[in-house]
Image (cartoon, rainbow, N blue to C red):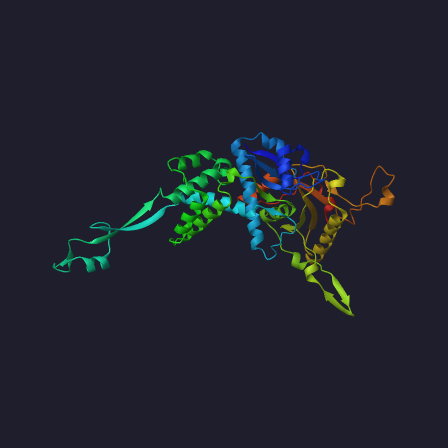
Amino acid sequence: MLIFYSDRSNVNILPTDLRGFLTSKGLIVEDDIFIHFVGLVYFGGKPYIFLPRNSDVNAIQQYSTVDKEKISRELLSSIHMYQQSKKKSIDNRDNGEGFIGEENLTLLISLLDDFNLNGLYKRRSRRKIFNAGKINWKKTINSFQAYPSDHSPLYLEYEGIEKRIELDSEISKIHAGIISDISKNLGWLTYSDLAYYENELSLIERSELSTENQLVITKKELDTIYSERDIYLLKSIRKYIKKSSGFDKSDIIIGIREFHGMWEYILGSIFNNREKINSKLAAPVYKISGEFILAPLRGQRTDIVIKIHDNYFIIDAKYYEASNANNAPSLSDIIKQFYYVKSLGLVEKDAKKITNIFIFPGQKGKIESIHMALKEENNNSNIIKTLDEHYPPIFCIYKDPITLINFYANGKKINFIFPDDMNIDSSENDA
């Protein structure tokens, strides 16, 4: 049964044995109050799923098993997709995100996906037979007597070739055992119905060879095959065998320590009408020895800019709890947004409105918008005078991380819609 927690959960709410395991693996260190992790922890025969912060864990715990597996599958699939995108990017540094178990996740998904698509490994062989099968003309001409006929020689006997596909070879048994091991507790990674795996594997025996002998026989088979799919599968099988011969007997961790980068990437992947404007924004100029030097690589970089008609929305993905002023974005994050508005207004002179937005994880939140005010004028006042004319407010929007992960995992795009109940007039900046 899947058990759910969320990123930034208090470590004291975790079961003692799980907390001890995570401490032994370095996910929890001394004096940690909150856990920093999103992904799967398989420990003591139980799968624990850590969702992004501000996910409605209590509601999800009440979902059906099928829905829980779907959420978990899409989360792990999204992490896998994000890891692969980082590998392909020019800047593929970890940046402190802390990927864990990337190789395990790739291996598990590839083995399950291959089985779902192609079934068990099929051993192909050819054997010599007589007077049956496809004729081997070279052997037949050299070995058998030909009799004259009207148009060509007639062979009353011939050597043939029979192609066989073995579904019960030792390799197939090894493969079946591996898929059975994975599917018992982690089959939901690619397929929600456990009965599917049980039915597909019910008629196949399991290999009784030792781990050492399994490696020997798979290596021997690998040296005789040429199909790219078979080679990849055999290498994956061997890799799995070497990793303790069965993940259901192991404790594993698959996920990401710091989710903020992935939160930003997901938001940037799912919205339509994105504008690429970073190359146009302002950059610092340094005067060195009387010469002005532009440093474009140090220029302003927004997360997301969306253009709808002539209205621009500057969106910054923020992975904060955002329940009060103490756990909201800091002044440095806020100041950057003001300068984004100013810079965008200089390069997009036809813009009707430029609106600043923070998007936080969660279905709802307490912080509605962020403004600036002079401290001296408002210290003793019940009514705060904001400086909206000088510092356009930043509107705060909340998006359910489970919903966005569903979009990302399934390659869906959505339109950004500014909430009707927000007063956009105060955020307008005439460009």
